[in-house]
Image (tube, rainbow, N blue to C red; front, top):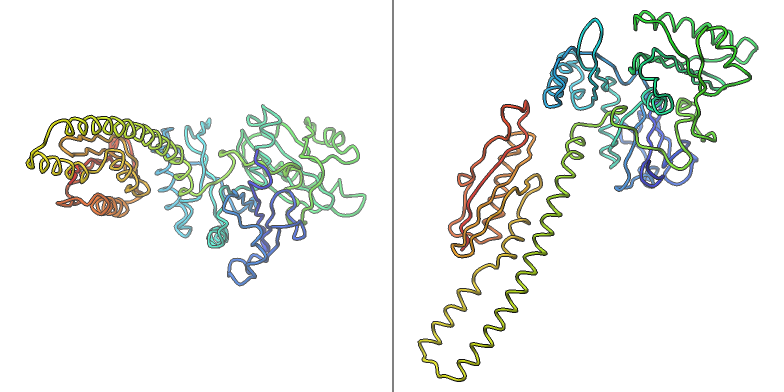
Length: 460
C-alpha cells in the first residue's frame, strides 16, 4: 500500500474529470484536488494552475474510468507463454476493432479454461475513444497514469481478498447507496456487466430495487449460462440483508469497507468504500490496465538498477586498484630516484625515461577507460561483458540493446559508435560495420526487441 503522497487518483466520468491526492475526490478536497469538465480538459483550454498542486513527478497515478469504457472479450488460444499471447492479442484487437487503433496498447489478460470453448485468454481493454484522448491529455499535462481501472475491477480485487472462494462463484455484488445502487455481476472470477439503479425516495424503494435485481439476474443467466450462487452486499440498511436473503433464496454476505465515508461527488459514488483512510492502495496488475510502454519500462527497471549497481562496484574496485598501483608506483619512483642519485645517468638514459613516462601518461588508465565506456552507453544498451587488455590496448565489449523497432535499433547503434569515437578519441574511428549483432532468442520471440551486439575497440 502506498501513502497519500505517493499515489494519486484521477476519476473520470461521462462529463467531468476529478483529481485528488487520496480519498477526497471533491473539488474542495484540499491542495492538489480539482474538478474540470471532461471536454474542457481534452481541449486543453483550462487554467493549468488548477492542477499544478497535483502534478508531482514522484507520484504514481491511478485513473478510474466508468465500467463501460473497458470491454471484456474471450479469445481461444492454447499457449500460456506471454511472448506468444501478447502479440496474438494485439493482432486480435486490431482485427476486431479497426477503429480503435490504440486498443492494442491498453489491455490486460488472464488465461482461462472454459468447459465448452476450451483454453483461451480473457482480455479486457479500453474501448471508449474518449479514454484514449484522456490518456493523451493527461500525458501532455505530466500526469501519465500508471494504472487504469474501473469500480468493477477494484471491487473484484477487494472481494477476492476478503472472500477466498469469490473467484470461483457466479456472484452478484450489490453496492447500496442512499439515492442509487450499483449491481456488479461476476462469473468464475470474470466481470460480466454492471448496472446503476436509481432508488426512489419512498417506501417502495426496496421493491423497486428487488425488481431490478431480478431482471438483472435473468440477464446474467443468459450471458453466463449459469445460475447465480452468491450475493454480496456493500452498505446494509435497516435489515435489508436478511430481507434480501429471504427473497432471493441465496446467501447474502456483508462486505466490509474502508471505513469512514470519504467526500465524494455523486458521479463517483461507486468508489465509496474503496478509498482507504491512510492512502489508496495500488491495484494489483491482474485488475488494471497499464500502457505497454510503461510495462516495458517497469520490466526493464530491475535490470537497469542491477547494471548500475554492477557498474558502481566495478568502479569502486578499479578505483581501489588504481590507488594501490599509484602507491606502488610512487614507491618504485622513489627507489629509482635514490638509485639515480647514487649513480650518474647518461643523456640517452634521460631521453629514454622521458619517452617512457610520456607514453604512460598518454595512455588512458583502466578505471578511466571503463568509466568512459559505461558513460557512453545510450539508454537501452546494457553491458553483458567487458574485457580490456592493458598491453595491447584493446577492449572487447558485449552488450544487449533493447529497441522497439529496427529504426530505433539503428539509431542506438549510431549513438553508441559516435559516443565511443568522441569520448575515447579513437584513431582510426570505429564504424557501425565494426559492430556485430544477432537477435536474441530469435526462435522463441514473436517481437524483435532484444539484440546482442559485440565490438572490438582499439584504444589510441
